[in-house]
Image (tube, rainbow over all chains, first blue to last red; front, top):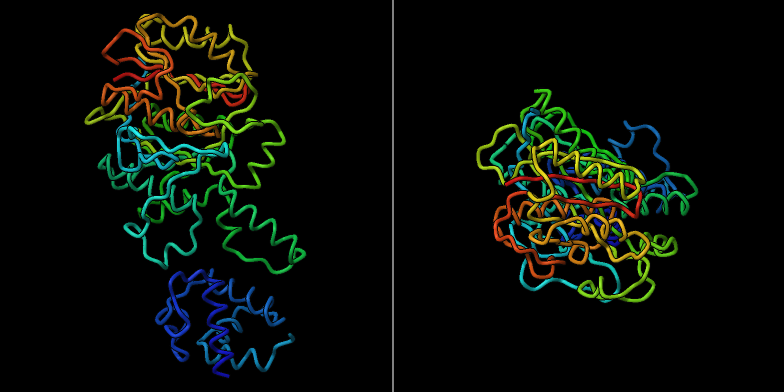
Length: 85
Length: 353
């Protein structure tokens, strides 16, 4: 699971173009939006695209997205439970 | 008499090292592949990493150029933000179109789509300066910057606004260079910019850049007066000559009063006859200058002409590589810009110190 979280963080860094940031700098339990990483609404759309392209998971309800993208821990659990590829 | 429009500041990012400067450097950037790519400033002085990550090359360059134009003018909150671009952010457009194809019109990344829209730079400028004023981008090929300037002039003259941030932005990508190469826009053989006018061939060299100016009704600390603008679509030589004459007459001037002509000559033997015709009626004391051997050719290259005109009037100096035909006058007061984009969109500007 730790390897998977690290890979997920690398994918997020690339998708959101977080230049100069390393996976270790993202706290697994910290909020991705608002405080913590400080992502915004366009980032949430980018994460929806990431989920579909890498894991075949379609998130159509924005409220579900808000819950899934709470933190790396929550996101990783959700992907493992719902991934189609 | 119509109200005079004053240019308060001029800012540029292009192939030459002129960002935050008001003269062209002695040593010019050159190219061996017929493209003069823009020189990117150090953006970290202006933006955080979180802000930078979503901006494309052209958006970053355009935003810092606009920031500097406003800073130089002392205007914190412009009353209008008006730009022109022939193609907008091509990098993002290409990225978005490729992803449509790659992912079969499925879920697409929003950032390239947002950045590819023509008005995204204007939106960022407005957000950065916290202004919700009039905000428009004109996309009219070789007339794009001219329509932005015309819009600002009309609004200032009608007293709807007292100042405006006006600018242009253009980029060239590898793919777009190839497409335009096939259409005959560029030289078939490699040509150095400094030798552009020494060879008789069709096509020119490509360029890119972003240029911003603040225009105002107030004369204080201005770089130049914009005394008039004429736009002509696919004219003949006589129509260009008549437009120039009416522009001068409107300002109680004649051809004898023109000290400098900034010519949009681009070395393309299919269209440079327009410049030959206009230059042939210029008198011996008038200096004829060129700029596309310094900036390259693009839809809004007239932005470089305006920047260079402001530089010449302010510093009373002409860069040696810009000098096409040396005149005898040593004082530069009235300056005429004549530019066209591949024979279609023609523009004449009259500036006064």
